[in-house]
Amino acid sequence: GVTQSPTHLIKTRGQQVTLRCSSQSGHNTVSWYQQALGQGPQFIFQYYREEENGRGNFPPRFSGLQFPNDSSELNVNALELDDSALYLCASSQGTGGLDTQYFGPGTRLTVL
Amino acid sequence: GEDVEQSLFLSVREGDSSVINCTYTDSSSTYLYWYKQEPGAGLQLLTYIFSNMDMKQDQRLTVLLNKKDKHLSLRIADTQTGDSAIYFCAERGASGTYKYIFGTGTRLKVLA
Image (cartoon, rainbow over the protein chains, first blue to last red):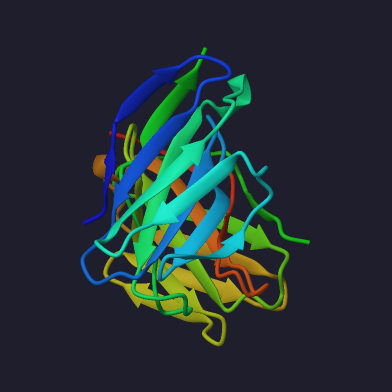
Protein backbone atom coordinates (compact mmCIF):
# COMPACT_ATOMS: atom_id res chain seq x y z
CA GLY A 1 0.00 0.00 0.00
CA VAL A 2 0.84 3.68 0.24
CA THR A 3 2.86 4.73 3.26
CA GLN A 4 3.71 8.18 4.60
CA SER A 5 6.19 9.52 7.13
CA PRO A 6 6.24 10.92 9.66
CA THR A 7 2.83 10.29 11.19
CA HIS A 8 2.81 13.54 13.14
CA LEU A 9 4.98 16.63 13.01
CA ILE A 10 5.10 19.87 14.94
CA LYS A 11 6.81 22.94 13.49
CA THR A 12 6.87 26.65 14.17
CA ARG A 13 5.98 29.51 11.85
CA GLY A 14 8.63 30.29 9.26
CA GLN A 15 10.22 26.84 9.36
CA GLN A 16 10.46 24.43 6.47
CA VAL A 17 9.12 20.87 6.39
CA THR A 18 9.54 17.78 4.20
CA LEU A 19 6.89 15.08 4.14
CA ARG A 20 7.52 11.72 2.53
CA CYS A 21 5.40 9.23 0.66
CA SER A 22 6.07 5.76 -0.64
CA SER A 23 3.79 4.81 -3.51
CA GLN A 24 2.34 1.44 -4.26
CA SER A 25 4.77 -0.59 -6.33
CA GLY A 26 4.37 0.03 -10.05
CA HIS A 27 2.48 3.30 -9.62
CA ASN A 28 4.01 6.15 -11.62
CA THR A 29 1.72 8.92 -10.45
CA VAL A 30 1.53 10.59 -7.06
CA SER A 31 -0.85 13.30 -5.96
CA TRP A 32 -0.71 15.37 -2.78
CA TYR A 33 -3.69 16.77 -0.92
CA GLN A 34 -4.14 19.03 2.09
CA GLN A 35 -7.03 18.25 4.43
CA ALA A 36 -7.80 20.95 6.96
CA LEU A 37 -9.79 19.98 10.02
CA GLY A 38 -13.43 19.35 9.15
CA GLN A 39 -12.85 19.77 5.43
CA GLY A 40 -12.42 17.57 2.42
CA PRO A 41 -8.98 17.10 0.87
CA GLN A 42 -7.78 19.89 -1.41
CA PHE A 43 -5.53 19.06 -4.36
CA ILE A 44 -2.02 20.49 -4.08
CA PHE A 45 -0.27 18.98 -7.10
CA GLN A 46 0.37 15.79 -9.02
CA TYR A 47 3.58 14.24 -10.30
CA TYR A 48 3.75 11.86 -13.21
CA ARG A 49 7.04 10.18 -14.05
CA GLU A 50 8.96 12.71 -11.95
CA GLU A 51 7.42 15.77 -13.60
CA GLU A 52 4.73 18.05 -12.16
CA ASN A 53 1.53 17.22 -14.02
CA GLY A 54 -0.87 19.74 -12.52
CA ARG A 55 -1.23 22.08 -9.61
CA GLY A 56 -4.07 23.34 -7.43
CA ASN A 57 -4.44 26.77 -5.83
CA PHE A 58 -1.39 26.56 -3.60
CA PRO A 59 1.50 29.06 -3.52
CA PRO A 60 4.99 28.22 -4.82
CA ARG A 61 6.28 27.62 -1.29
CA PHE A 62 4.58 24.23 -1.69
CA SER A 63 6.85 22.13 -3.87
CA GLY A 64 7.39 18.48 -4.58
CA LEU A 65 9.70 15.85 -5.90
CA GLN A 66 9.08 12.38 -7.24
CA PHE A 67 11.86 9.82 -7.44
CA PRO A 68 12.23 6.75 -9.66
CA ASN A 69 12.08 4.42 -6.67
CA ASP A 70 8.35 4.93 -5.90
CA SER A 71 9.08 7.61 -3.30
CA SER A 72 8.11 11.27 -3.31
CA GLU A 73 8.31 14.38 -1.14
CA LEU A 74 6.20 17.38 -0.35
CA ASN A 75 8.17 20.41 0.80
CA VAL A 76 6.62 23.45 2.40
CA ASN A 77 8.73 26.57 3.03
CA ALA A 78 8.00 29.51 5.32
CA LEU A 79 5.32 27.65 7.25
CA GLU A 80 2.19 29.54 8.25
CA LEU A 81 -0.35 28.70 10.94
CA ASP A 82 -2.93 27.86 8.25
CA ASP A 83 -0.66 25.12 6.94
CA SER A 84 -1.71 23.00 9.93
CA ALA A 85 -3.55 20.09 8.35
CA LEU A 86 -3.46 16.42 7.42
CA TYR A 87 -1.36 15.94 4.29
CA LEU A 88 -2.33 12.98 2.16
CA CYS A 89 -0.51 11.44 -0.73
CA ALA A 90 -2.21 9.20 -3.23
CA SER A 91 -0.62 7.00 -5.84
CA SER A 92 -2.07 5.60 -9.04
CA GLN A 93 -0.92 3.55 -11.98
CA GLY A 94 -1.38 6.45 -14.30
CA THR A 95 -3.34 9.61 -14.84
CA GLY A 96 -6.35 8.14 -16.60
CA GLY A 97 -9.86 7.98 -15.22
CA LEU A 98 -9.64 4.29 -14.41
CA ASP A 99 -6.35 4.85 -12.59
CA THR A 100 -7.85 5.10 -9.16
CA GLN A 101 -5.93 7.05 -6.55
CA TYR A 102 -5.03 5.05 -3.45
CA PHE A 103 -4.38 7.13 -0.37
CA GLY A 104 -1.86 6.81 2.39
CA PRO A 105 -2.72 7.36 6.08
CA GLY A 106 -1.47 10.94 6.01
CA THR A 107 0.94 13.12 7.96
CA ARG A 108 -0.60 15.46 10.50
CA LEU A 109 1.31 18.74 10.54
CA THR A 110 0.82 21.23 13.35
CA VAL A 111 2.30 24.70 12.94
CA LEU A 112 2.67 26.72 16.15
CA GLY B 1 -16.79 26.14 -11.36
CA GLU B 2 -15.70 23.21 -9.30
CA ASP B 3 -17.72 22.48 -6.20
CA VAL B 4 -18.91 19.31 -4.51
CA GLU B 5 -21.47 19.55 -1.73
CA GLN B 6 -22.57 17.06 0.88
CA SER B 7 -24.73 17.20 3.97
CA LEU B 8 -22.61 17.24 7.11
CA PHE B 9 -24.23 14.61 9.31
CA LEU B 10 -26.33 11.47 9.08
CA SER B 11 -27.46 9.25 11.92
CA VAL B 12 -29.05 5.82 11.40
CA ARG B 13 -29.86 2.78 13.50
CA GLU B 14 -27.90 -0.43 13.07
CA GLY B 15 -29.51 -2.64 10.43
CA ASP B 16 -31.18 0.25 8.62
CA SER B 17 -30.09 1.58 5.24
CA SER B 18 -28.04 4.76 4.99
CA VAL B 19 -28.21 7.11 2.05
CA ILE B 20 -25.49 9.72 1.65
CA ASN B 21 -26.05 12.40 -0.96
CA CYS B 22 -23.69 14.55 -3.00
CA THR B 23 -24.10 17.22 -5.65
CA TYR B 24 -21.40 18.35 -8.02
CA THR B 25 -21.12 21.14 -10.53
CA ASP B 26 -18.70 19.99 -13.23
CA SER B 27 -20.91 18.41 -15.89
CA SER B 28 -17.83 17.16 -17.73
CA SER B 29 -16.73 14.96 -14.83
CA THR B 30 -16.15 11.46 -16.08
CA TYR B 31 -15.67 9.52 -12.87
CA LEU B 32 -17.19 9.95 -9.44
CA TYR B 33 -15.91 8.27 -6.31
CA TRP B 34 -16.87 7.44 -2.78
CA TYR B 35 -14.19 7.31 -0.09
CA LYS B 36 -14.44 6.42 3.58
CA GLN B 37 -12.30 8.00 6.29
CA GLU B 38 -12.15 6.59 9.80
CA PRO B 39 -10.80 8.68 12.69
CA GLY B 40 -7.08 9.34 12.36
CA ALA B 41 -6.83 7.42 9.10
CA GLY B 42 -6.41 8.16 5.42
CA LEU B 43 -9.02 7.68 2.73
CA GLN B 44 -10.25 4.25 1.72
CA LEU B 45 -11.76 3.87 -1.74
CA LEU B 46 -15.20 2.30 -1.49
CA THR B 47 -16.44 2.43 -5.04
CA TYR B 48 -16.59 4.58 -8.16
CA ILE B 49 -18.97 5.09 -11.05
CA PHE B 50 -18.36 6.13 -14.61
CA SER B 51 -20.50 9.00 -15.82
CA ASN B 52 -22.29 6.94 -18.48
CA MET B 53 -23.75 4.66 -15.79
CA ASP B 54 -26.88 5.26 -13.74
CA MET B 55 -26.25 2.72 -11.03
CA LYS B 56 -23.55 0.49 -9.67
CA GLN B 57 -23.95 -2.14 -7.00
CA ASP B 58 -21.12 -3.64 -4.98
CA GLN B 59 -22.21 -5.94 -2.14
CA ARG B 60 -23.89 -3.67 0.46
CA LEU B 61 -23.12 -0.52 -1.52
CA THR B 62 -25.31 0.96 -4.24
CA VAL B 63 -24.30 4.10 -6.10
CA LEU B 64 -26.91 6.08 -8.01
CA LEU B 65 -25.96 8.80 -10.46
CA ASN B 66 -28.36 11.38 -11.86
CA LYS B 67 -26.22 13.18 -14.38
CA LYS B 68 -28.96 15.61 -15.37
CA ASP B 69 -29.25 16.90 -11.80
CA LYS B 70 -25.54 16.31 -11.06
CA HIS B 71 -26.55 14.23 -8.06
CA LEU B 72 -24.73 11.23 -6.68
CA SER B 73 -25.81 9.02 -3.80
CA LEU B 74 -24.34 6.15 -1.84
CA ARG B 75 -26.69 3.67 -0.22
CA ILE B 76 -25.32 1.34 2.44
CA ALA B 77 -27.60 -1.58 3.14
CA ASP B 78 -27.79 -3.18 6.59
CA THR B 79 -25.62 -0.46 8.13
CA GLN B 80 -23.29 -1.67 10.88
CA THR B 81 -21.52 0.18 13.68
CA GLY B 82 -18.26 -0.36 11.78
CA ASP B 83 -19.66 1.82 9.01
CA SER B 84 -19.44 4.86 11.29
CA ALA B 85 -17.00 7.19 9.55
CA ILE B 86 -16.80 10.22 7.31
CA TYR B 87 -17.78 9.61 3.70
CA PHE B 88 -16.44 11.76 0.91
CA CYS B 89 -17.64 11.94 -2.63
CA ALA B 90 -15.16 13.12 -5.22
CA GLU B 91 -15.27 13.97 -8.87
CA ARG B 92 -12.42 13.65 -11.27
CA GLY B 93 -11.76 17.10 -12.62
CA ALA B 94 -11.98 17.28 -16.37
CA SER B 95 -9.56 20.15 -16.65
CA GLY B 96 -6.72 17.88 -17.68
CA THR B 97 -4.85 17.76 -14.41
CA TYR B 98 -6.60 14.58 -13.24
CA LYS B 99 -7.11 15.96 -9.76
CA TYR B 100 -9.92 14.76 -7.58
CA ILE B 101 -12.31 17.38 -6.19
CA PHE B 102 -13.70 16.33 -2.84
CA GLY B 103 -16.80 17.30 -0.97
CA THR B 104 -16.67 18.36 2.67
CA GLY B 105 -17.66 14.89 3.84
CA THR B 106 -20.70 13.40 5.57
CA ARG B 107 -20.21 12.09 9.08
CA LEU B 108 -22.24 8.89 9.45
CA LYS B 109 -23.08 7.78 12.96
CA VAL B 110 -24.58 4.33 13.39
CA LEU B 111 -26.54 3.81 16.59
CA ALA B 112 -26.61 0.34 18.13
